Image (cartoon, rainbow, N blue to C red; front, side):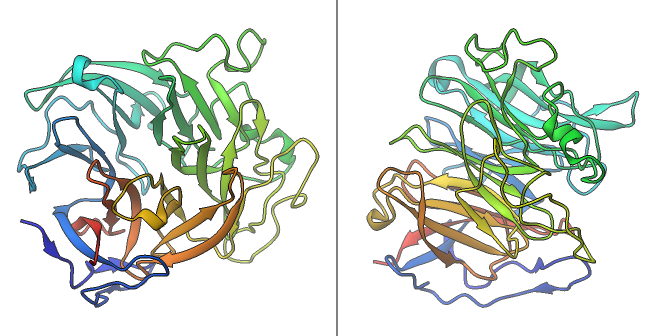
Length: 388
């Protein structure tokens, strides 16, 4: 049964910090809508992503490698069988996104992104599988994409379908060090999948109109490149714009409007500095032939999860972007210009509720938020409901 969330879960604020329990009033105030925060499911281990099926079931991934179902307001006790082996060593690896096929009602396909073990190397890479969800089991699982990228973290793993049925996936730079010849960094090298967004057909094949199809030495799956750690991805259905949020290093998180064959600059340009001493990384903030972010956060909020609101429950927020923050422990609401290409204002919602891993709009028009704890203590998925 749903209940108001009066206390946020005790969540880690950062490395070496202690958990907090921040009191929430029954009604949360904001510029355009007052709302309540209601628990949907709790007792989850690092919930990473959320999605809904046509029949109303809600799917939640746990980074530890479990796919869960919420049915009729209740979290089913058992995880969905059939999920492939997931690499979970280290602080960032695991099971990432879950995404139903646009025609799920007829084909029952769901897609999972995750860190696939690379046994020969002792590490892992970002991978997509699809399978049919039948009788609460995942059947006929097949790999449709394996990234040519290896490293210690920055997997990316966000997926989205556009209106034409193309599948987009973020793949991070895998923590390749940003030093030396910055233009030679793997995220600037289109012969691999470090720091890119890929575009695929729904079966994993390469669309014929991808920008690098037929170009020797380039990966044909690449749509855009020069990214660091992209952890938010969303399509604006009113414009078709593809939006992405990515982590900068110490400072300089970015909101980018993604276009094909564009270089988003990491690590050549940016606003971040090296962790700890704050030594500069980038050559400059801008450079010819490289894209600037539409919006940025300094200090970083560790942006994770991204959603364009199109529902009727919060009409004054229609068309707004919502970006979750991990280190920032907040939900950023961004208003856009009339043409949908510029950020006009930003409002901070849910301050100190905890590390926000994902934000989604449910089929009911409510806004759902996945909370996580760095130490893997149980946390919740909550939702925002209008106060009146």
